[in-house]
Structure formats: C-alpha cells, structure tokens
Length: 389
Image (cartoon, rainbow, N blue to C red; front, side, top):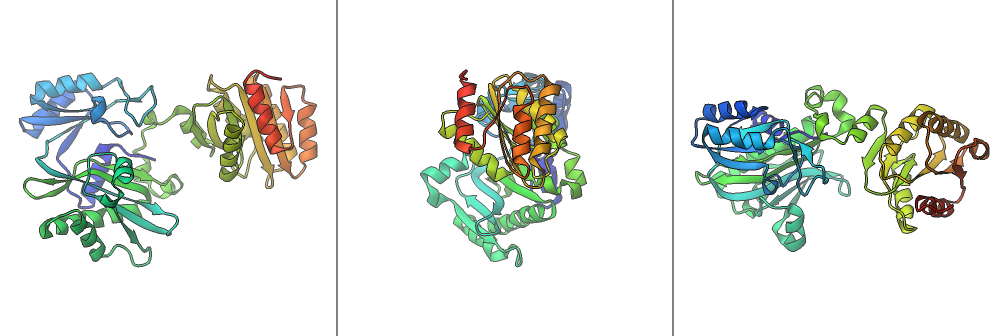
C-alpha cells in the first residue's frame, strides 16, 4: 500500500522529520484559499498521485499569488497525470498539495528498505538527490552509500554520521540528518513499512535539512495492525483489477501481454511467465491464487483475466497439493460456465487426483485443453493465442 505525498509528510512530521508547510486542496477555490493562508508570495502546487517524476509531467508548478495557484490547480484537478512511472492512461488527480517554497541549496537522496540477502534494513544515501536513483546507480554507483542496520542492535548514531559525512554535511547538518534518519527508522519499524524514500532531502540556504518529498510503501500483510494507515488508502490510484483481486486474497499484477496466466504459488507463477515468454508469448498478468485455491477463487480469477480485451488465451498451471486437482477442475468448469468464456484455455494440473481432474476437463464440452507437460502446455497456449489450433 502507498501513501500520497501529503500523507507521508504528515507522518514524517509526527516522527520529528522537518517538512515544508503545506495545505491539501481538492478544488481550485480551495487551492486559492490555501495559497492565501500560507502567506508567501510564491507557492508550489503539487498534483497528488502515486507516481514519481510529476514535475517533468507538469504535475508540480511554482506560481505567484492565489490567482495563479487557483489556475494551476484547475489545470491539474479532474485530469489524469501521465509520468514515466505510470501507464499511458496515467493516474487521476483528485487533490493538490499547496506548499511553501523552499530555499534550496543542495538536494540529497535517502531511502530505506529490507535487504533480503543480508536480512537487514538497508539505508541508501546519495549526494545526488532530485534525480532517478536508478540512473545514479548505473552511471556513478560510487555516489551511493549503503548502511545495513541489524534488527537486534537497531540504528546506531555512528551509522547516521557515516552517511552524513559521506554526503558532505557539516557537523550541525549531520546532527539534523541523524534526527531525520532516526525518524525514518522508527517509521519503518513501528508502521510496518516496506519502503521509505525522501527524494530530494534538501539542505536549505539557511543550513536546515528538510524532507521536500516523501514516498512510503507499507506491507499489505501487516495492515491489520496499522488501522490508521490502512484508512488512508486511495483506491482511485490503484489498478481496478488489482484492487478487486486483493478483496479475494488473489495476488494480481496487470501486464501488457496476450496470455492470461492463473497459477498457485508465486515461484511457479514466475516460472510460468518465463516459459510463456521463452516460447514466443507474452503474459497478460501475474496471478497467484494461493495454496488454498477454491472454486470461488478460480471463478474470480477468470473474471479478472478476461476483463482485459488483450487476452487471447488462458494458461492455468496448478499444483494440487493442499487442494485436490479434481476440485480445481470443478472450479475451472464452473468459472467457464459463469463467465461465458469463449477464449481457449490450456490447463496443466499436477498433484493429487490429477488424472480425475484432467478427465473432467476433457469431458466438460468446453474449449479446455488439459496438458501434463509444462513445455508442451506453454507451446500450446502460445499457438492458440496466435490463432492456431
């Protein structure tokens, strides 16, 4: 789950991380009032969407006076903002954040996430803020420093100083940076975050360290104990199919191919997409129905897959361990009936009662092709997606 910038900054402020003063506005008139309330000659109007690179797409504007703030908001609200981090459709702008401008001297980068290899939280810092960290990592990797935090010892002050000195901060600025880093670490641990990022973290001409932007991602599996954060979810910023999938405990990600995939187990799903690609096809989605697959889940999965007009064939790759293959076959047949599916389906069922399940699919009278071998199944579904028989 992601938060908007204004929500992230509110959380930052609660944890002692300095942020510029700003006001949320959901209408052009409210943006005008916000600019007037802030009392500065200039204000920054920022579109609130779950995507970066807003400035390059016209989603961040520095304007002079309340009238200009109203006009800027009018040009953003009710429209979709397309950035390099969105699809061609973009994301809807339903609110803007009107903020006091900052007197920037330097822009830095700071983030934290879980490093699964080291089994620790890793902080990444760079003196090259305000730009894509992927580009910095590719072109000048020596400009990024990593610090690994032991879950037993926690963040240590010397680690913060190490990063501060690496980025060329003065002693006073390093002290401020230490407080910022401590706040981020507390957010990460106490709020079940999976990613915290400030880009840019600025040093003002007055010598203050301030979070000019904020990105926060949270572990969906921990939201049951983060009620306040979960209540800030914005479904309008999420893919509709992915949102529906979460209601049924389905792990679904929209892709741009023509072969719908339904698999149980994330590892098997990745392997399935790889072998489809290997044989000349393109997956239309990642869909893991989980180990406890039921006929109801299979039906909802079919609805998600067939919602895309790009899908030309469906590939089902299920290992019947916890759930028997004949129950999966029953679910597939029920789903085909309920959805009125006309697309060809290739089903590979392996595990308990797989012979019975395969027989049920063959005798169903629908366009379902049971195949036992994975390579053969991938080749078959690719051929069918391209109009073959």
